[in-house]
Length: 297
Length: 285
Image (cartoon, rainbow over all chains, first blue to last red; front, top):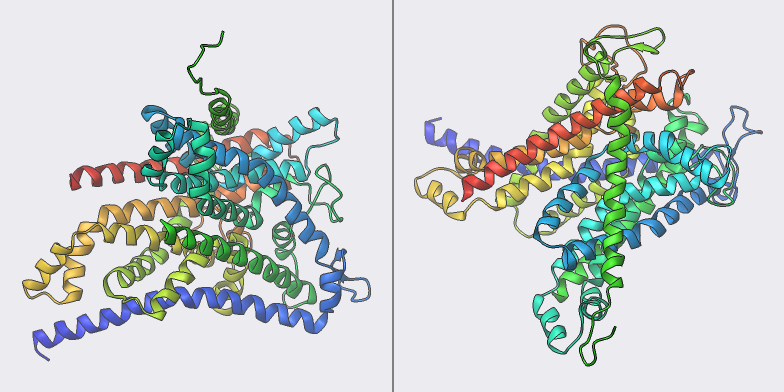
């Protein structure tokens, strides 16, 4: 083989190699899906799928007569803490995004953007630690509780985790509103707040919804903060002052100790599969909303 | 007093959004303030350079620091070549076909997969199926998969800003496509690629959930010598010290110290990325 043939062969070879790395990404996603489905199927051969979606008791046990694998308490905990996080994070996040894009002057914006990036960079385990050492005592003192390790604590921490996503994505959406729309509104005599309410927010609406959805996806899948700060009690949650245990926390607690290839082991994959499907649906919805928004701009 | 005839814009909307931004800013300051105020006193030379002693109630966190550094290196070795390769494919080769759209959709979805599920996947694939056992390899590869979507996205951004003329110039001189990528496109994009890689590694270095079942342990005697062994890592160490230790109050100062080291490590990586990015920007101008 002469030199040029070698060059051409290398060129072709690397073309395939690059293509392979691209296909690898699909393989990873499909691999995750297959792994979850395989183990979840194994679980449903051993435990009743009806019980799984109708029972509230998650009580793994080596004795099959005593064991109970009900999803509902875990799912309700995950949804409750996510709901709480969104109640806090959505107004704060959108308000901050509006402040940054519509009110803040040059230097303030110059400082706020890196601040949001720093907030996003703090590892979740550190946020969880703050939940234990600062938020929990504060909640216990404020509401006269024994300890502050409850759903409210988890919701506050998850709000902090979701805020950078919500702020950045909705700020981008607000920023992308054509300035001609804004100018037209001012020209008609509207003030700044009316312009925000009637022109900017409606125009950026799909992007803001996408930001919220991404924030929800982030909060539902978050593990360490809820694991550390919500008390991990295995009961159906009654409210924000109850200690709760989310799907993610249950996997984190039990996977380390469970013997391989038991019903319990497969059960953890089954709840992981539920979690995966929820985050997937939320993320796909976020994406399709954002795409629709792009079409109109 | 109201001025007649002149419309006064109400002040409350501005105050409302200003207070939102202020609350977010105060949260950040409070988190960093608590961590550094309580943690900095625990940081001594001994804390950074010695092993935990007396059932982890005294001594330092050296093995956890070394473990996290080694883990991050393995993550880098795994995710950077794959991520850059995939980004090169998407930006330089791929036509707008079904497959390309599928790859892009897969990457976007991977970015949204919860980190604990990557932990399960790492357990099933690396620890069990490929039989690496719980080890630095298994945990590093798991984190590599987790950071892959970020590495790809940032690398693609870096490749996108390389002017088309550079590629055409290389091709006109007789280079093959691969040679133009290897000798022209990638070298020009290196600062951007490095920025993105460091950012995604800083994210991976702080992750806890994916290493829970893939190799992190409470305690090892001695430094992690071989990547096939289990290891200590800063985030996992902080998790254990703050929730699982039998004398939690006694080890609080150590937990705060660990939190400071972890946060500083992550911030230093971010700072490095920002410096790289600014250098890159100046060069382009």
